[in-house]
Length: 297
Image (cartoon, rainbow, N blue to C red; front, side):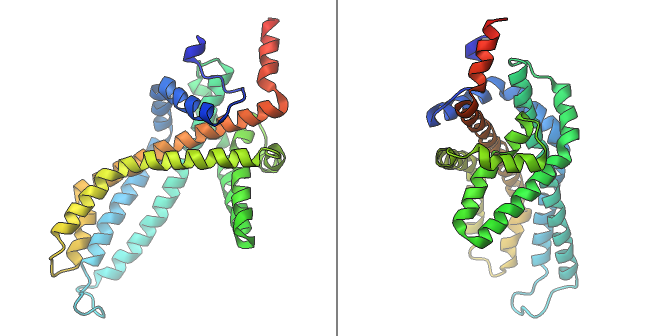
């Protein structure tokens, strides 16, 4: 594949190059990349979306059962039953989102690995196999990272930031170095040594950029919510305000916003992989060695 149509991951980069190559990879690979990621995670994504729709509908229904003139009473006996249904739906939504998040991360990382190893020619069957093989490993990795960051937060705020940045590279180490979950977590601390501040700085810039881009998807829903809220402002029945959350137009706009934000989050993942290879190249010069070895073939 020609150099201008291929992103070389194994090389050193500064902040500008990381941002540029992140969007270059998306520009070159967006169609096969996103279509395959969507194919992998479509079931949990649809279930999560269905859960969000049901939560909005059930919340609107539950609040319509409240007598706001006498808060000690409920218009009918369905409020408490609806509340239980909402709690169950929220729990299911979190589970579906977790499954979708894990599958998107596994699929994205192994897509990039296949892309690198095959010079841009991705082996989709291999990715599908890895998603099945590594699912529980990624779940375990996510749980352990969450626990470590949580304990760090209890100790002090800065240790939580420190461990969060360190462990952001654990999934890349797990995939690209074929490490176990515990080894990936342990090796993250040694791997980032001497490169924490640059990783922190790049992560902040990427995070701000992705947040701004992701917010674009929320603008239509926010505008519609403001317009609807103003139209109901003079209503004597506060429960009518809650009816907006079961409005089909608002729900569709909200779903578009959430799905858009989820796919923009992949930008962070790609940038993190580029950070990993940047540090790896500085420490081990793996990409340079590969280029030298390829000259003798």
